[in-house]
Image (cartoon, rainbow, N blue to C red; front, side, top):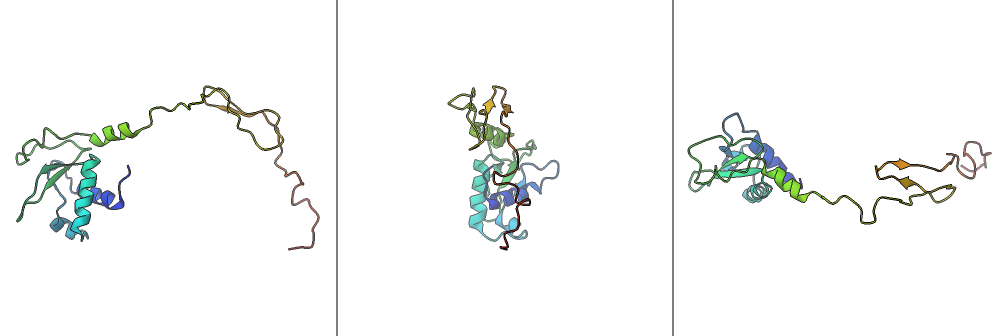
Amino acid sequence: MDLSYPAKALLIEIDRQYVRDNNGRLLASRAYLKKRGWKSQDVITRTLRELINAKLIHKTVQGHRPNKASWFAVTWRRLDRIAEYDFGASENFDFGGFNKMAIKCENTNLKPVSGTAELKIVPCDRVERALHVTPESTVVTFYNTTLTPSGGHHLDMPPTGEE
């Protein structure tokens, strides 16, 4: 995925909190992340937004001042049933949502516009016949060349006296 480096790092910070029954209660507050070396609230906010948009995390509880942190769940694990979630958090959880986004971004039209019958991919010189690309996508070569350069092998040349 095309995530920024801070987003990848924050995703690791969030996932490392997972034990076995706390997916949905993972923290990404500044107070929690400060102990782990995160200093900028702007970076945390921006990367959380990036991870939510990429459907890699899901917010289950909206934090508020003075001391209530937001809770998150990673979407590649099942959401654990916890009674304290905000209304609709469980219903809107999209398990594996990041996979669905990746499928939308894939190139589904893999056939070239010009077709696949005969492609002329040939070296510049000393070619007997053009390369032929079969429908099974195998390349068959039909030219006969040696690996020795046209002027002869450099080790077989007499010394010129120049270094």
